[in-house]
Length: 492
Image 1: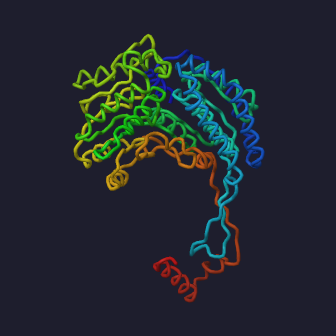
Image 2 (image 1 turned 135 degrees about the horizontal axis):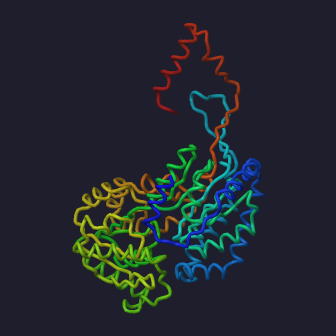
Image 3 (image 1 turned 90 degrees about the vertical axis):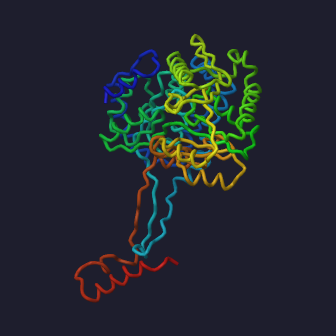
């Protein structure tokens, strides 16, 4: 495990190394066991009170959040509000208003073999859970899952990313203010901290990050048969067909792609555009970029454009861009790189080679290749030949075309004539499939991710031991056989 993490860490941007002693983390993990057992019977009112207290602490640190995000990512205050605080507060409000109903056992209707029996599904807290958060939305993707874990009645250990240390410091201060470590604790650190935590027998692990690290997390969890929720990533495709509203599609995609400077797991990663409308679509994209971020010459100074998180990620993106150009890709707009400012200009490319890095690696930045197509069946085949993405977007006015794409592809989520906003819908599950993730979160789905669905059956007037137990007389055998044969009939 240690060697795998070390190998992967070597490929990532470096941050100041600071690790929490393993003994300290183990002591807190041990202290959380009795607390987890007591929280299992906590009431909805008690869980709601904790979420409300966390909400007040979150809002009280507004200025500190602004400063921390400015230091770590040069993220604007408006984007901090819209992409970090808003989703968490919406998750909180949703949980506060719904957790009482979520906690209620649900009835399981009887089938032929369970007539006369009372059955319920009870939602039981998993126990001690670990939440490993990424750097790209370090507030949202840390506290959002925490709300779900609290709603479900768990103890929690949080591991934020070391790549956004200022945001992590504010988060740590809030957690220490609101919670006793026996209920919720936060440990900062790099590889050694993660390795030590993954060696512990948690009852559930909720991880957001890359597929590469997701495999490491799942391997560690398997040693203890710990359940996991993995929210990963991948290359999310977009399709623009000849019937699409090009102005709307371009404006929506340029906004979605460059939100957080492209450092979003569900950002459009490449765009299929029908040959008939490609030129007009590109023109509309250029117009949309001017509207969003000003003229191309002035974009590097635009405070609304978040920066790449650090120098090594900037260098990685510059390498992807250079590789694409070396293999024949042309730049339609952008292409400027300033490593000293961690700046990569919003960039559209065409003609990227199939074997180029930009067409095979998750980009996670403001580079967007455009691929022409004339046959939607070839597009579907290419999407299906790649690992299943976290999201898929299609812009079209043709309902049959939309149904064809949705019915013949697989992705964690999808949007029609929109991009990315399925993440913000609290009553939709958010998660991936296979390479892009396992399980889902948000709202009721987040509550269930941190809950064990326990089957509880109460005996009634129909007694199995009277009907199906020995001695198997001819009469009893005939009765059992009649029941079996009846199952061939359609249900009423």
